[in-house]
Image (cartoon, rainbow, N blue to C red):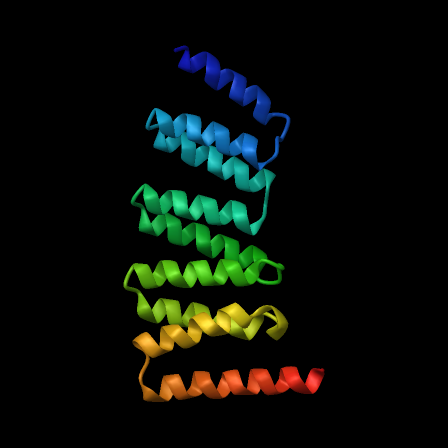
Length: 163
C-alpha cells in the first residue's frame, strides 16, 4: 500500500480538527506500522485539539502500552494540572492512582488519592472514596484505614445534613 499517500490524506484531514474518532483512526494507522514516535506526536496534537480527560487518559494508556512509565506519568500529571476542577476529574485521579498502584508506587498512589479527595467536590467523589477505602484496606496500616473510615462516615453525615 501507499503508506506515505495515506499519511498525507490523514494529515490534510487533521487540519480540519476532526472529532476524536478521526484522530484515533490516524493513531491506529501509525501503530499498525509500528510508528510509535509518529503516534506519540499525533497524540500530542490530539490532546491540544480535544483537551479533555478522556483524550488524556487514552494518551497515558498509549504510553503505558509503549512501555514508557515516565512518559505515561508525565501525561497524567499534565492532565491533573489542567482538569482538577473538571466534571471528569474523579475518573482522571482514579486512573492515575491505579496507574501508580500498578507501578508498585503505593505512596504515590496514596498521595494522589488524598490530593483528589481534598480538591474534588464531595458530591462528585463517591467512587474515589470507595477506591481509596479499598486501597487503604490493601496497603494501609490500622490508623490509615481508620482515618479513611472516619472520613467516609463524615462524608455520609455531611451528605445527609445537606438533604
